[in-house]
Image (tube, rainbow, N blue to C red; front, top):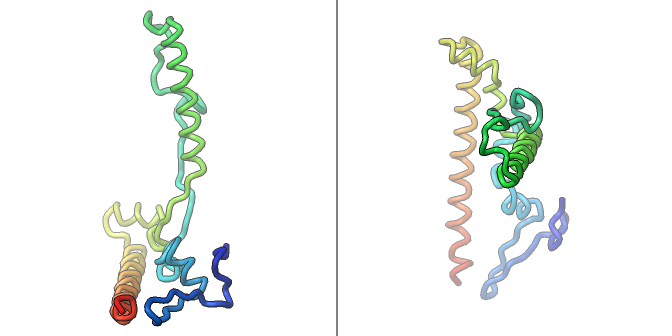
Length: 156
């Protein structure tokens, strides 16, 4: 989504004592949201992790206190119902959760490497990690140079 204060075709300007610094809307959006998206997008995929619900179905507690004498009070029953609702909410959140993973480190690749070797899977993973590290190092170098060049304008 475009930022409300900048349009993709127009650079946003920030001025300081007559010196102007310009950033495009996509640069501002990246800075405000995911500054490494362009660097890491080819190496990282977002996927849903496998989630296994507790035995007994959604909201099931991993223990049963219903037969304990202390569980008969209104407060105890209310607390257990609340805990079951919380477990259901947690399971729904975990089922919907997404997490970033490296393309080269799929679950199969990790399992192959963990079994002792991994062969081609390990070599591809290492190559992808080295490439990502190099891209991040280059981005750091570029950002450092940009900050160094902008600092005199900001300080003026």
